[in-house]
Length: 161
Length: 107
Figure 1 (cartoon, rainbow over the protein chains, first blue to last red):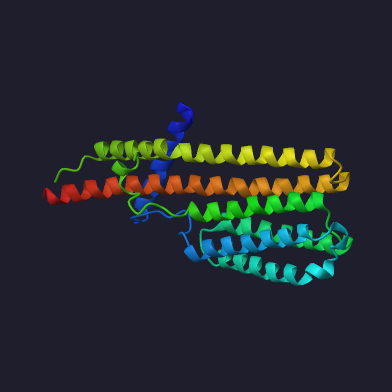
Figure 2: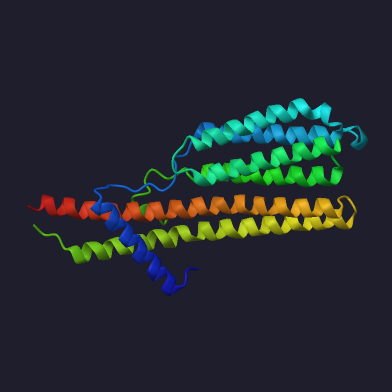
């Protein structure tokens, strides 16, 4: 629950924002990017690929997880994640999704380099890293979903439905 | 022409209040879910270390990555908060435009 004092200040700030918008001749204010179905589908597709990668890795005997055996898959997934980052970067008002996809890319590269350096990937870290990617891709998908606004958002009578 | 600015502003404030009341639980739920997931993830990391599945160096690395993951998850709540503000502002603008239109019709 927003505390009463904070709530009043917040309400006042929003009213000021409305007047600022009106003084600029705006009829509506936009703070977040529009929902993009293609990006959402791409998130699901890449997420599945990453999960398949870890499924395959964990099915391989721990002592037999040479980097070279997985190098092609690392490259392929990295390209897909980079494409997701670029897609997010191309959309205005999309800073949060850019940051989420960039974090996914950074961790993918980090784990790839770790695998390369050790020429192995332990069960313990693989299980934790797999679960982490599930959460990160869930965050990316939820971030896109959050941009799917109700077309009748401007009708306050429908807000409490 | 009958345009009551005081009433219009009061209606706009009421509209903003109604949107915030309706939308705030979504932000609260979002933050609570993120914290619950984080708790589960930290428990899994602790369990892995206690079972000897990861060493101290790996534990340090996993905790660093956990920070990145928590930040990413909280960004979803940030988008939801922005969506709430956008909705509140646009609803209030709508009230203003409707008040102007009603006043123009009365001329």
